[in-house]
Amino acid sequence: MNISFDTSLFQTDLSLAYESFGYQASLNNKTCNFYKCASYIQNTQNAKIQCHLNIDDVVTIQVADYGESYAIIKGIFKHKSNDGYFYPFIYVDWFENAYKNHNKLDCPIFILRHDGFYRKIFPLTVVDKVRKVHFVHDCNTRCKENHNLENKHYLKNDFFFKAI
Image 1 (cartoon, one colour):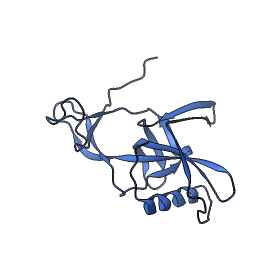
Image 2 (cartoon, rainbow, N blue to C red):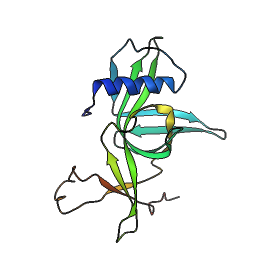
Image 3 (cartoon, rainbow, N blue to C red):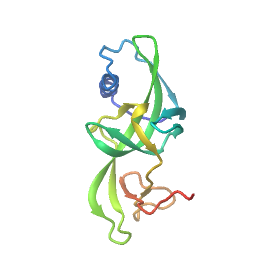
Image 4 (cartoon, rainbow, N blue to C red):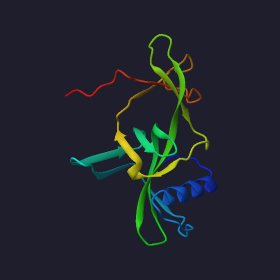
């Protein structure tokens, strides 16, 4: 797993993630176990839906502070809380809407944020839809054999659909 983060921001975000489901305590345990994927069953009003998350999946997250937003999963981990139970979390980078469209493709342009401007750790349960959206790197002339990672522009593919 190749995630770089500021340790104090990580601890602050983890504390906020615990607070989001009513757990108010300092974190005694600093150890996290990271995974490449996670599977779980989401209970909805109509059915139980089996969900699978992987590193680099783009998901829709519904969070009170942000509304419906898009993020790319950079880490999936569990943390042992003070009560002895393990809780699953995701570590994300956010897509920020640039509020402009690509001049030829007419797709909305988003910017992938790698900084600490937005909170990055959330309980696994905030994932609203897995792969509801599809983003494509907005390649420039510096993208030859691989994507130029300095270019953080992505296109939201509104034309992507799921075949039935």
